[in-house]
Amino acid sequence: MKNEKLYDAISDIREEFIEEADNYKFKKNIVPRLIKWGSMAACFCLVVFGASLVMSGAFARKGAMDSYNGMGVPTPTPGGPVKTVLAYNGALFNVSNDLTYLNAAGIPNVMTSEDCGRSMGNLIKTENGYEETVLDTDIELYQYAPALSNRAVYVIRDGEEYMAGLYSNGLTVGDYNDHSPLSNLYRVYGVKSEEYITSVAEVNSAEEGTVLTEVVNQEALVSFYHATMTMESPSFGREDFKKLVTDEMSEEEYQAFLESERVIGITTAEGLKFYLKWYPEDGWFYAGGSKAYYPITEEMQTWLDNYIP
Amino acid sequence: MEDNQIIELYFRRDESALTETAKKYGTFCLRIAMNVLNVKEDAEECVNDTYHTAWNQIPPTKPDSFKAFLGRIVRNFAISKYRALHAKKRFNGLEVMLSELGECVPGAESIEQEIEAKELSGYINTWLAGLKQEDRVLFVRRYWYGEEVRELAKKCGVSATQMTQRMLRLRRKLKSFLEEKGVVL
Image 1: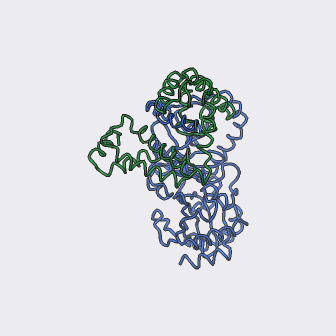
Image 2: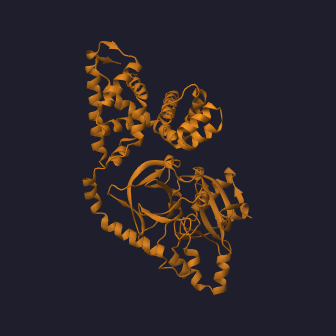
Image 3: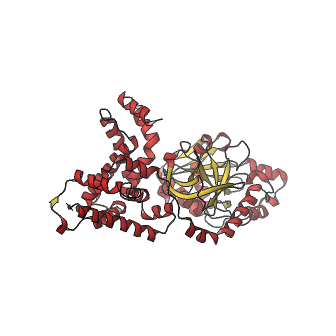
């Protein structure tokens, strides 16, 4: 075909043009974007304010449970693996380039320019973390190229430094009780159906995700996926959960509840990992990524009895 | 690791050359293959074939630009794979690009002789060299790297419609340039 011939000829263009195109930094057409974004500015302030409230722990009552995020490690603390956060697209992401932390999320290497997928625009850094901006800054947000079908990971380039933005929770607006169903977590991590889960394992959270028991059998993974679907509703935000469950506990019972915690790690087809906290004595799962408690259904309990000793 | 150090590994027949290549350019190659094929497994196969080809070609080849060298190989593999599988499946990425490029094909009345691909590349290089830098980058990103119009629009901060119009103008420019040169395909 003639157009294919043309296409083949384009294959042989000069190497300098190929390099130039890959290295070129576009100058954005700012004016139309300013108009578009101006109307969103107030909303975004609210987003950041909501995020800062959640992060500051202002709502926390019994902090042990609240300090965890979707990856099973604490949110930013000085000297910790998470440097700061990114507020993007209605969600919070922990910004880190700590290899241990990234490995726990299934990311094999620290971020480099080679991990950058399509550019999502510029960022600015404020005391609340990274935020979107229409200004032409030297901080850019990219999709994470090795994981093509999910929104769990982004790459942030700040000058010469590349960092990962890992999904922290699905909510930046609203109150302490906000939460979302398990299917939201699946969506963010690119789990479109049972085929997208490749491993379910109990991990030792205290030892950076050391695997205690791993299930990789296809049939078992399919039944796991369907069992989690039975937990889609009801789900409880942390405030509701406190009222319903932990407020009724004595201090000893509450300590026992915390100590009973086990962690289930789910690995996706793209190699990413996220975690559910499991409170076996009381029959709950907690997902940091959706900030929700899910009562364990009969079907889920049967699955756990069969596969996780 | 710097490109010349990686190339040195190839020359020494050190197999860590492949690991270093994958580490530095694996994502770059995968992105190009994915833009054509849209199927991760097929794209990964092309990337692996690219490493083997690099191993076989270096030495004696010593690429000036290692990145463009790999990019060209993976792109060719992806196109071959696309063509091999095309009868069975549909891949939007390359199909859309090909249909767009059809608009650049000069009309038969302007033609004196059929042209070889290599000669055609020479004309395209001349045409590209005469473009404004951003236009050239956009054309190469679209038709060499296979990036989608809406991605390019986002990068430039314009709407997809505006970008579509800009690409259309570029294709028309190429068409008239080729017609002026008496090119027939």
